[in-house]
Image (cartoon, rainbow, N blue to C red; front, side, top):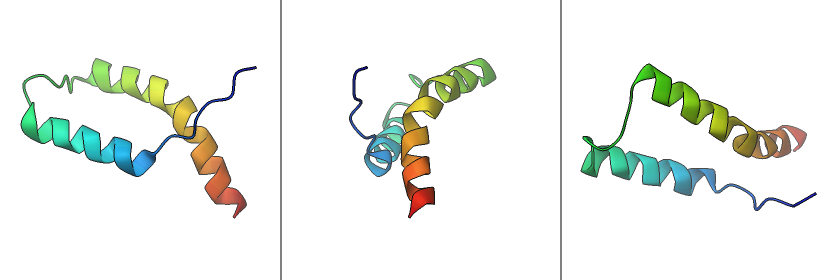
Length: 55
């Protein structure tokens, strides 16, 4: 099984916020797009959440 690099959540969040501010017309915020993004990101963010809970 391939190991995944840990997700840098603060950096990812900052980049998304930057895109929302600088490219609002490019970012699709429809319900469908948000749900799709959540499905993609949830597994990536889960290990970080699990690690925090273990501390």
